[in-house]
Image (cartoon, rainbow, N blue to C red; front, side, top):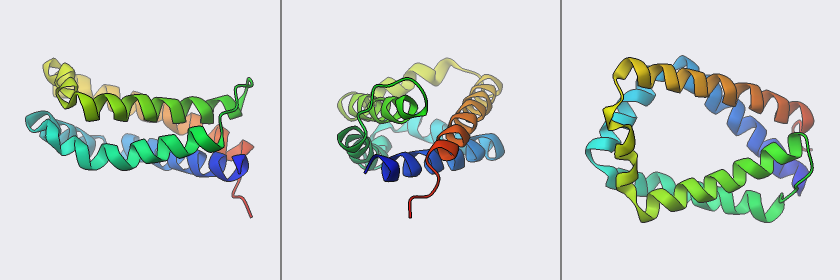
Length: 128
C-alpha cells in the first residue's frame, strides 16, 4: 500500500507544483477570493483532510529519504486542513502581502513542490 500512496502523493505534488508555477496568477485570484470569504475553505479542506489521513494511515514511514517526504506531506495536509477547518480566518494572515509578494511565494513554493514531487515520482513510479 505504501507504493500506491507514494505514487499518488508524488504525482499530486508534481502536478500541483507545475500548476503553481504556470498558473500563479490564477492561484493568487483564488487565495484573494478565499481571504474575502474564508468559509470557502471548508469545501476544499474536507477532501484534503481525508487525503492526508489516508496518507498517514497507509504510509506513516519515518525513515530518511523520499518515503519521509510522503509521510510529512500527509501530516502537513492533516494539520493544515484541520487548522483551516477549525479556524478558517487564519488565511487572513496572508492578507497584508502584496500581489507581487504573493506571486513570488506561490512560484517559489511551486518550484519546491515540483522538485519534491519529481523525487517522489522517481522513488514511487506508477504502481501497477
